[in-house]
Image (cartoon, rainbow over all chains, first blue to last red; front, top):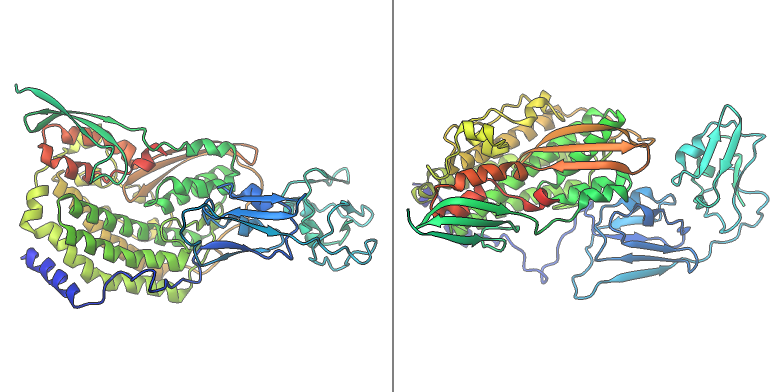
Amino acid sequence: MATFKIGKVVLGSLFKKPATRMYPVVAREWQDRTRGHVEIDVTSCITCGICQRKCPANAITVSRDTRTWEIQRMQCVQCGACVDNCPKKCLTMKPEYTAPGGEKVIDTFNIPEAPKPAAPAAPAADGDAAAPAAGGGLKCDTDSCVFCGLCARNCPCSAITVNRDEKQWTVDKSACVQCGLCVEKCPKKCLVIE
Amino acid sequence: MGKRTIIPFGPQHPVLPEPIHLDLVLEDEVVVDVIPSIGYIHRGLEKLVEKKEYTEMVYVIERICGICSFGHGWGASASIEGAMGIEVPERAEYLRTIWHELSRIHSHLLWLGLLADGFGFESLFMHCWRIREHVLDLFEKTTGGRVIFSVCKVGGVRKDIDAATLKEISDTLNALKPEIKKLTDVFLEDASVKNRTVGVGVLTKEDAIELGAVGPVARGSGVYQDIRLTGNGAYHELGFEPMIEEAGDCYARTKVRIRELFQSIELITKAVELIPEGPIDVPVKGNVDGEFVLRLEQPRGEAYYYAKGAGTKFLERMRVRTPTNQNIPSLVKMLKGCDLADVPILVLTIDPCISCTER
């Protein structure tokens, strides 16, 4: 009597709480891991643009000239590629979804100018993760460099080339975004961003 | 011979969640020929490999389909890993297997609901989807997404599941078993449901093999075929055996999927017991230079992934062949000779996913 079985299930639901929620009166409970929207900590962003390049949905636009970070909320697919690849870890994924609406939301954030280092000639010796100043460039003190290649392997933009045999260290300045990852990873602390 | 009439079926039709068009050639009420046509939802995702780095391409490939999205993410990652010669940690393989089987449960529950909707059993449809919500909640808790998970990456998985949550997954599924059984009994025993499925759309074993049927369609016709037997992920350690039914009709295909539902719960319970400790990913360096072919058993059947790199950060070619693509010839064969009223049920029993087919 399978018909009776479904009858019991159906009649049983009359006396149970509804399986659905009275949205939007009853708020949705978010899980800790829910990928809802991307948030940015503007104080540590260095406008390197890696998030823009990695975004599969082309939802992020970073402008170094106007120092803005822009995200098209309706275009973002919440994959988290930007969060994973951000060298300064200034992007985070938060649980709440963007509110539904008739218009495509674009959020623009202004990135404050990075503070100029107090003494540019003497950068932090411990590989400080402070945002490097815009302008200038990445330099290597080849006297103390051991040409280990860690900087090249960790460079998110493949801007550094290290030739161990010929003891050569080169940086493609057009590709370098001065994220400072190489400076942090360098075991001999021979890299500086000026 | 009666007068022939052509009835267009789709691309918009109540039983079709996605657009496919069938021209049904009828003699009286009997279908004598079928001309399928696709092309309503092509997005050209494979072409994007030329613009998206291979690490990010995984997130594009998994968006081929909203139901087997985990499998597509796994297939894309594993084919790239194969081309690069990367060995994935064992824990990551187990986690992938657990998520993949959860996908199968939610896919089959969704399909059962659609089938119930197809023959007009609305309350059964609603209850199947009510249970599916519990599985989606487990997905959200462990991956952060309900439909698109983005947990697979080249080199492993992005998120771990702690022991307490693994136990919760296994406990929740085992607690759902009696509820699922109450509903599946209706599909298997209710006389009015059986009238719509038993003996309808028979696909013989020979036809299934000849037409290259895959997944539950092939297994419902008695073909011993399941890519999980080849031991992807952790299947080789879980003692997997495919579910086979011999009749080849709609009822057999439904029964295969129902048996697979319970089997998936068993596989997850076993995987939770056996999952080893350890890392969940390995660092990935360099670019893809080589090619690799991988087959994976999606909820709908065998999917095929081909990745080819050319030494740059972009792949040269990514090819995905999905199960529905393979099952359309079998569908055409099944439809010939059936009644017009059975067409919606028959179209549903191959579990068509047109987004997958057209990519």
